Image (cartoon, rainbow, N blue to C red):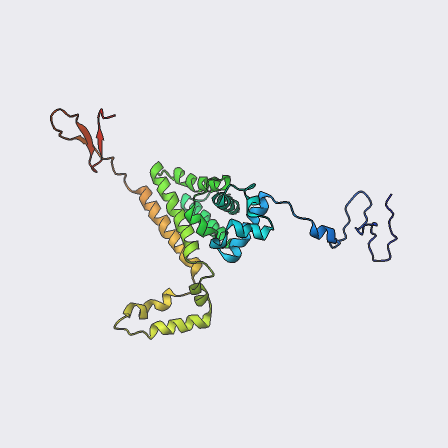
Length: 289
């Protein structure tokens, strides 16, 4: 049986191996630094570790820096080892996106109107994307279909269906909102030169003075409005744009529906089957297949 050394006052008892002693019923509350053997013990490579390290690469160096070779180097494995956990870089990106989108809170207050629910979702999506620099750029180029990505789509589409949008119209509105939110996160990141410039009060004042000093005969509008454009109002810009979209959607929902285009027969040479032509020029042949 392993012998325990007698503990001196204010010193935790330890086993012969140097680990804190316990009474056998609960783990020790004392923290002990890992031994050299524990330091050298390799961590098991898992899909979760691969995705976590990939997120770290993107956050630190940007989405373009993520390569399988570089990721393998950070994990201390050969590149081939990664392919036991992900098929390729594209699947890795989808896993990254789905993991990040899982952080979007989809729990909505049912008492809110449909436009308010959509605005709440857009704000939450933007916050999550900006908490993970570089992810919005990947999301702009890929359309992940993982469980969390699908749940986000369901959350956006449900209020549109409830509001009475036609199926095709709801699909268009969904991507309009998604493109606006993702595009805002991509095109005006909080770390951009312009955002840093207008956030600094002294630099912002110099910038406004620069606009006022422009030749008024060449730039009359910039002289008058420049200081109202280059301001620290990033959140306000997003909210205002989202409100404009919501107002437009409300108007579109209430607008009278245009009737479907009528079909009319077209004249055809003798001996050929007549076809149906819609008012927008599309033609459907009869008996051609």
